[in-house]
Image (cartoon, rainbow, N blue to C red; front, side, top):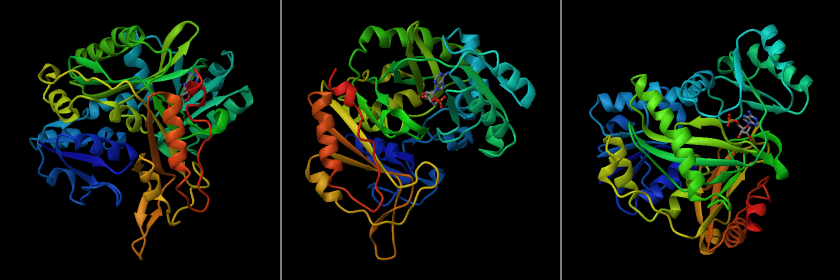
Length: 408
Ligand code: AMP
């Protein structure tokens, strides 16, 4: 099978890496460190299956365009991708589906938004309605910060039009869990659970980012919890989408919070997580290309259900100085071969070649270094040992990825 992966980040590198076990893979546009990268537009790539990686092209309707051109596509159309493209719409769908989630209201005007905010106990959660690369969410410890954020978002000062509707939510507390389900429009199968780290700083300090690290499996998350999330979250959501005439073929990624009252939905994403893909997909022992092709064809029963090895993976994201606000770019990357000599897998995201052909930093999140081992502790040591071989001026990473899980 020939598979075309659309995208250029660490998630797409991980997809290509694992798909290549059983398929011929091209990646568009990819990046200089992803093998098989081509500049050809997706619709012109000759492939048996197209896998769309990031949310922005899905929200913009790329899967619809490719299906209209006769391609077999893994990824929802623009209708289903609204789950991620509009947080207000997502909340409406999950409320109709009866999925447990935080109470909320959506606003386009400042005064009613502030009035609602003042009725809630803290922490206060203010989200931009549209896509904001994981950075449009403020969880504020004080009402004053939340009020200022509502005013700034509705004025279009932050996130432009994506922020002109805000969703205000009840604050929830508890550990987070990412559970990714592969859907064929009707059925869904779960992938191995993972946990990611969204904040920039150690101890979850500072602003949200696209994701600074992840690990899988998650200690304490058993098959019963996964089955419960599939039954009470994923299945009713797929059914509600179908009721609305939406044939959802792709990843439904449930971002959950394990609150004292049980699991609650924080958000849905409509694609593999980045960096969750870098720890979940390498653990797969079954054929990823066959699984995604079956889902894309609307019949998951055509492929063996996904199974995972008993080992652990931990990925540490190496970012540039200034991320997420204003990343510094253009610095030469040293030590990649050393990291690979440690046996780790390095997935490349924000990289480019400079005039001299050197690999240089070109974005906030540059590399994700995935270590493996029989336990989370061993995989964590492996990832950090390999990451220590890589350097550039201003390289930044968190030091506490999977630290708690490693001692669990
Ligand atoms: P989202 O983009 O909706 O996933 O939000 C990003 C992050 O903000 C989540 O992973 C949580 O850490 C946090 N967050 C979002 N919604 C809530 C909420 N209702 N209560 C507490 N934290 C939240």
